[in-house]
Image (cartoon, rainbow, N blue to C red; front, top):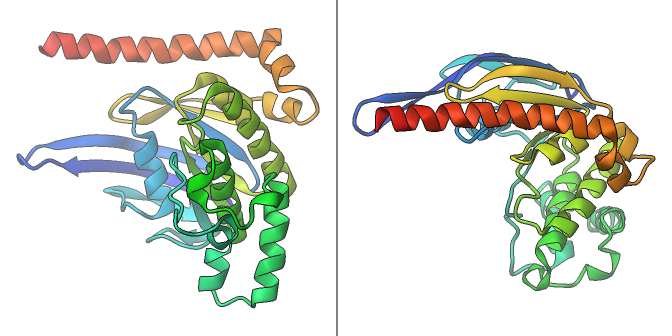
Length: 268
């Protein structure tokens, strides 16, 4: 059981001057096992705060998160994290990075070697096992980060803007890889992104959050992730339905951004 239940989670940050900021307000979501969820919203809507609470890095002010049937009280090996920057050990080789978690868990060397070889094949890095990660491109480093996460076999994978720093072509290729790995592994994946197109393409479910205090304002089922598993990415993104939904969601985000800017100007 690797689903996630977010029960009325609120988060208030205390500021050094004694004030406070309400980052999240009674966020409630039920994410079934094996679902790919994309979370989208304007800057400051609490997306990353929510992801860090699910990961166990932050404790909510109110409410709770249940993952895999257990209340989240801190980080756990069943919830893997992929960051915008791979957070890799640059002095290690690709294989050493991917095998790090299993080594720390005390798994046998032969078993680790077979696991690493399999994962590097899945992410298209079979010929780079002995390459130091500092010699890899950004896209290749993110492939290593994905493989390292999968090596720990978490039930839930949390992604915080994992493709945000990549160029457009590499980003699209990595989107295809993420979809393929999701389908092959059956993992529950929660993805934070600022890209509307990426959210629609990767999420079989889209959560749109409103600006501070962050709260869910839209919960949409989407067909495009499943379509992209059997069709070319460009044809999916160029389809009339994709364009229609993209423009609808973009308009929603732009309206919220304009409200934020208007509020900032009013208070200036």
